Image 1: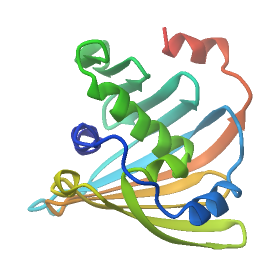
Image 2: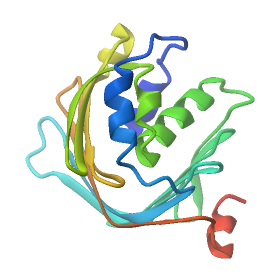
Image 3: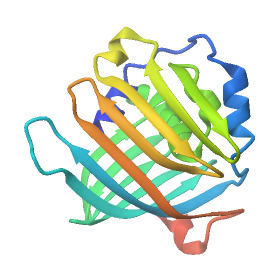
Image 4: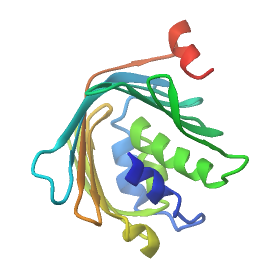
Length: 200
């Protein structure tokens, strides 16, 4: 996740659109819902480390308010991304807090994360070249950075899914690989009272 955050800070605005037909085809398969919930398993294979680092937890996407990424194992950690702020906490301790008022790139970072986790694949075409295919209800998408500075950090991103994004693989330029599998995914029209509190 940190690699993605730092890489997103280097994105340039106003890049030409990618293959609109491919994105529209994929987006037609995605469930159009304002709220997405689910569980995740994340595995990070670092260069020089034999055993992958694995974490599990839950995620919540509100397409208007932001993304909540809650790791439960091996230790509690929460990442909250809104259009105005990025906040990371380990338990009750704040580890990182970035405000869009002081860090203008926060809006760019949040936009990229919203696109990845909510399935807004069309927005990804602004900064990535794309190849992919659609087979029935299933689809796959491979993204490579258009910007040379971003390519120094991210070699590529692979996405696949059906009604929602089910798998993300982030290949860092360093050779590190992060894989995220999303399961037990459900969609809804609004947040619960408990979920609303996550954004307060």
